Amino acid sequence: MSALNSGSGRCEPDPGTSLALALAALGSAADHFWSFMEDRSVRFLPQQLAPMFFSTLGQMVTGRGDPAARRAALSVVGRMYRRLGLHPYHGTVVAAAMVDTVRRFAGASWEPDLAGYWEVGCRRAHRLAERAAEVLGDGPHVTVAEVVACEAACDGVAVLTVRPARRLRYLPGQAMPVCTPRLAGQWRWLSPANAARADGTVEFHVRAVPTGVVSPVLVEQVRPGEVLWLGPALNVGLSLEQAGEADLLLAAGGTGLAPLRALVEQVAVSPVRRRVTLVVGARTLLDLYDAVALDKLQQAHGDWLTVVLAFSDDRDVEPTAQGDLLSVALHHHRPGQAFYVCGSPPLVEAARRRLPLAGVASESLHLATTFRHALDSARWMSRQRVAHAAESKVADAAAGNSGSSRSASDAT
Ligand SMILES: Cc1cc2nc3c(=O)[nH]c(=O)nc-3n(C[C@H](O)[C@H](O)[C@H](O)COP(=O)(O)OP(=O)(O)OC[C@H]3O[C@@H](n4cnc5c(N)ncnc54)[C@H](O)[C@@H]3O)c2cc1C
Image (tube, rainbow, N blue to C red):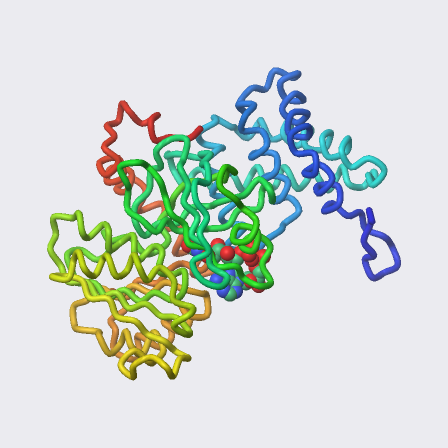
């Protein structure tokens, strides 16, 4: 199918098909896109980044993904825009390269009307990238990572361990856009589950959302030896710096455990002594994953860490472990604690409504960004502006980088 019925009887051209055909031959399409610009002496794009840039721009133009996914893609091209030295005047040749590439690979499905669609869409995406570049500031853009382990942690959840080609610059609690080349250009936010390790590996905990496009592929199909593309790590409302020196109450639902476990690891190496209560919610005992790591953390740091389990739907566990995550977390809440919540979008929304009514002060409440509301996205944008400068300094220090060694942790 190369056209969609608009409802008025007239067939609209279908840009999704033309993009899908180009992405089916990603290597050749990206080479063509890159050569088109090279032939015109436009040389901002390193050839090895052409597949990432081309596919991400293409997905942005066709508007795939929910608001969070679109922000993830925008963060990637925004940072590339800055780091590759793109300028507004590049917009014309980028759009022309895109039209020429998609036309060539769409074959018989190409409709003349598509040229205008791709041209306008590319120029719009280019302007959005320019604005994102201003908001995000300087920093790493994209890195390739090899998947070194995939473990089925429990039904529908995988722990993927990756080794980035270059040391990643991130802080515990941050999230980064991640993309499998199997679904090129479709970026999703994932949160590292560990603080920086000596060997540079990073763990991601991924839940396969049944109706999802990307997460089932990450959980069920991605294998060791494959690569993932990683975008810039950004603040999504869970950084430790926001808590000052307060004690922490961390409430994790499902794979929301990942960034909160990384925060616990950060506290373990921080000079600031504080008490941490980590409440981990799961539906049943069978849905609890990462139990071994949690047990190790509890054994190693029992003097300041308390791990509490909350099962919302399991009558077979002991009564003290029964209850929904927010109720159990509220039971452990003490004045002065910084209260962090991370989990599915419905959990974060429930926390936003419920915790202030239960007496949790708004300034001590730190909710993971879901990008589901305009306000959430606006807050995220302003947080990037404010936090960028301070965080780059801390991340540099955590990764042991001085200004002169920035390239060691930077993008491919
Ligand atoms: C800041 C941030 C950090 C994140 N960190 C992680 C992480 O560490 N591990 C992880 O597994 N996921 C994480 N996510 C969620 C992840 O980015 C994807 O949204 C999720 O994997 C679904 O992607 P998909 O392509 O499979 O689904 P899509 O095709 O994008 O969406 C399909 C449908 O599922 C809905 N949906 C999306 N996410 C969820 C969810 N969690 N529960 C229920 N419905 C959902 C969408 O709204 C949509 O209706 C994070 C999200 C954000 C915003």
